[in-house]
Image (cartoon, rainbow, N blue to C red; front, side, top):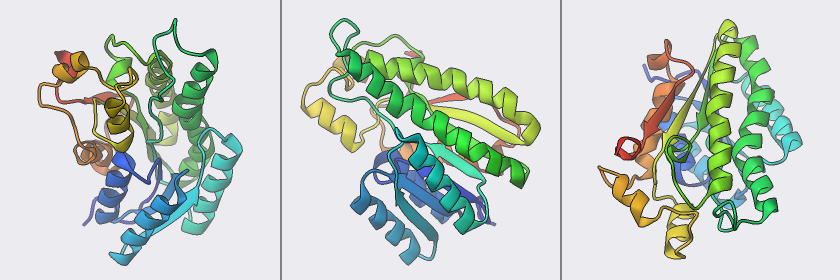
Length: 254
């Protein structure tokens, strides 16, 4: 049997990069998918591709910095699909204005927190009651190796991802009695469209050469991270909660 057969999975930031790769992998494993992103054309395209291949997917335009929009989308998916079993908080990323603490605009810190910490916080808040009604579920958050090692150039993003680490641990303890597991993936430098753009512009928010050199196995691709999300989503990880898994080509230990 497929590992996610009969499960309903919500993925934020599903239109591109790791989210898109994970959506396709989850669909291959039998999941019914609720896809969220601010990129409508790309989101509808991936939903259509999954449906054409025999899967089931629905896309909604959702800005994860808008807690009300998240709540509305979660309620829509729960109603349409009969419940929610999996939440993958994938949306996020560093931005061009993020920088060293002394250089970045203060409002950029607020933006980094809204995208990378508030969004997952709000999504968990909306989803957990639905998972509890199903008798359990799995939440997968997205941290970063920047939250585990000292880096330079994206202090707003790093601060937010540090919050994801501790939020994951706190929710793991609180949600265990409900049968809900909460874990996080900490990717290294993955060649998504966002990272490629930052690198091409020579922006400090992207990986600099020192960080690139830390990756013992080279820089990653979205398809290298998606299997880790699948592991946390499926029953293979049924005895795992509160863990932060680096998927980073060895960068966090080099």
